Image (tube, rainbow, N blue to C red; front, side, top):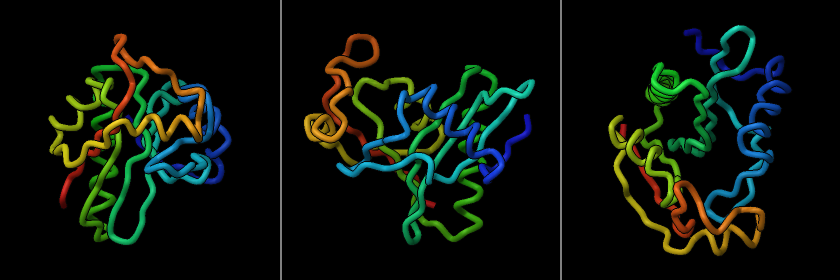
Length: 157
C-alpha cells in the first residue's frame, strides 16, 4: 500500500473523492465552515482509484483530523493513513491531535480509541447549531441513532 501526500497535481481527484464521500466540500467543525479543498492530508490508490483519504489542519502545535475514509474495510488502509498522520505530527513538533465525530458513529469511536485516542469532550446538542450552517445534515444518523452530539477525541504526543 503506497500512501501519498495530497499535492497540487492530485487536488482535483481528491476534491472529487471528498464530494463522493461527503456530498460537499464544506465541513462544519466547532461551528465554523471549513473548505475541504484547503485541507492537507494523505491518500491511497488502488488500480488508479482513490480508496482511502485522511485530511487534517494544523493550528500552532495542534493538529485536527477533519476526515478519514477507507473504501476497503479490514485491509489496514485507515490505520496506515492514521499512522502516517501521527508520524508527521511527531516529526513536526505537534503535541496534540484531535478530531470530532458524532454520537452515532460507533465505528469511528471504536477505531480511534483502539489506536490511542481518548474521548475528552462532549458537545451536547451541537448538531442543532451545525444544522444552522449546514441544514442538509439529517436528524437521524448511522443505524437509526438520533444525530445530536459531537464527541471530541484526542491523542497527546
